Image (cartoon, rainbow, N blue to C red; front, side, top):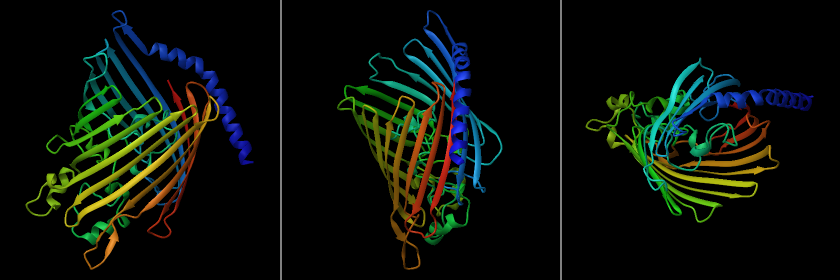
Length: 405
C-alpha cells in the first residue's frame, strides 16, 4: 500500500512539474535584465523547498523540534549582478522557519551579500567583501538544496558538541554534562553549516593550484546570529584558508586551516579573572579530496579541531566523512555517505577521565529524481549511533521537494 502511495506522489509531482516547466522558463527570462550591450546583467532566481522530517527524540544534528514529525518549507531568493567581466555582486535571502530546520514561526533573513572584484581575466586574483560562505573544505560549494545529494549536511557541520559560545564552564564536570540538561542551541558544532560570517577574502587560481584566504568576524563554530556585522564586529577576527591542487580534471586535493576566538561577547563576564575572549580560540585543520569519473563522484573531508576551554584545557576532536554519488540515469541518482566523529578524554576534575562529547557514527543514504530541469524530489534515510553512550541511536527519514526558478 505504501509503495502505491509513493508511486502516486511521484507521478503527481512529475505531472505538476512538467505543466509548470514552460512557465518557469518564461519566468527566468522575465527575471533577467541586461543593458549597455550586455555589459550589465542582473538576474533574480530562487528555490522553493518543501521538507518533511521524521526522527526520534532528541532530534539529531541541528534540527530543533520537540515533535517527531516536522514540516519545514523554505523560499530562497538569489540576486546576481554582473558589471563587465570584473565586478560581480550576489545576495541570498530566505523566508523560512529558521536557518536550521525548526518548528518555530516564519523568519526573513539576508544570509549572504558580497561584492567580488576580479581585475585579471585569468582568475589569478579575486577580492571579495561582505557576508558569505567560508572558503574551508569542499562541501560548502555544493551545500544548496539543488546541488547537495543529501537533505542534511555532513556530521562535522551539524553535530552539536559540548562547546558553548555564550557561557564559559565553571568546572570540567559541568563542561562534560551540561549538554544533558540544556537545549542543543546552547552549544556549537565544529563548523556551523556553510558559516556565512562577515568579512573579506582573496582567492585565485595559478595553473594547477588554487588558493583562498579569508578574515571573518566569527569562528567556524559560531552560530548564525553571530555572522552579522551589526551583531559581531572585527575586534576578535578569525582567519581561515584553503589551498588546493588539481593534477587533472578528475582529482582535486585541498588543505584547510582556521584559527580564531569562539566565544561571543556575552561570555566575557563568565571567563576566569584577567582573561578575555581572545585568550580562548578554535583551531581547525582540514584535508579534502574529490574525484569525478563518468557517472561517479566521490568526496571526502577530514577535520582535526581543538577548542581552548576555560577551567578545562584543550578539547580535541576528529571528524571525517566519505561521500559517493552515482548517476544511474540522466534524471535519477543515488548517494551514500559515511560519517564519524571522535572526541578525546579530558580530566573530569574528580579523579577520572571522560570523553568531553560522545563519539558517534552516522550513515546517510539518499536518492534524487530530477522531474524536470526545474524540479526534483529527494528521499533520505539516516542512522546515527553513539558509540560511547548506550541508548542514543537515532533513525531519520526525510523527503525534500525542490522547485528552482
